[in-house]
Image (cartoon, rainbow, N blue to C red; front, side):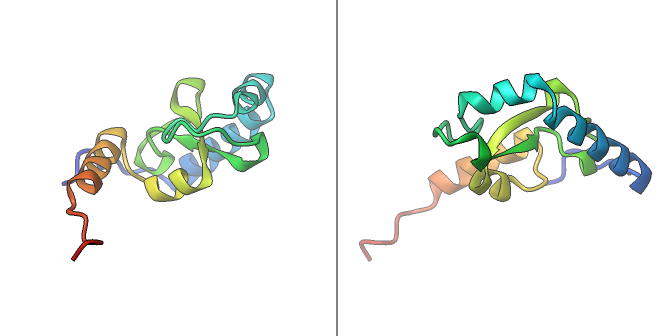
Length: 104
């Protein structure tokens, strides 16, 4: 189910990625990393093992702003990919609903 389709130009993507690079260098972001928690799974990681994830991905119209970026472990960031928050929640729910087949 597609919720939010936005045409984002290559120029806009480049501009937002540059803003993200600047944000990564900020003290605000360094403080977020120092807390060590993944926004999605809640597990603690050393700062160098956390990545910057855009809640609303750049290619889906998201911006590189403090309100749209969170620290995420590499596993969660790779699993989330370009999903919007509502799509990510649905994905997680679908994983819980799948029957456990180990006992078969």
